[in-house]
Image (cartoon, rainbow, N blue to C red):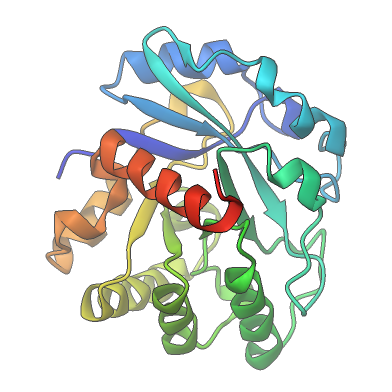
Length: 241
């Protein structure tokens, strides 16, 4: 399976990442990647940019070194009701919005609390995907989350970096992919690169997708056009654009 979209990358603006947008795009061009999403952490993360940063991403060119650039965010879920840390007026300016848990932004709850937070985030019309939902630090009811993603036509991410830094993610990610295949829910692939050299690194993700024989049509990261069409369809439905 060929993955051409890296939907999860961080720049120096995240505060704990080490490359610029230009450096990430240049590296992507050398690894067969056609499109990247710049998804710096939301404002509640230590060292992350303020809300205005995301409002001004419009100045970034749509294409750099031949790579299509999506202006996005990895917003932090900061309450168990699914509240995230960026206001609606800024979210509407972005191409791609992910939401995720980080223990620096919210204390891990029990499985019921975590599930409620993710389900409510998925119901937010301005959120496109949940990042690293297999994080074992924030256990969820996988069936309920996958069912909600299907109901609201949202994506769940399989995060390559999780297999390295979130010990125990493999079991949860495997179950998520199996359930997504069973229920026809789309997934996206993120390197979660915090330095340009990791952009397009999907070795662990590819192994997992191959293991379950995941249908390519459910992996939006295999087609720039399919990914853009999905986002355009969501924008038309939610924003009337």
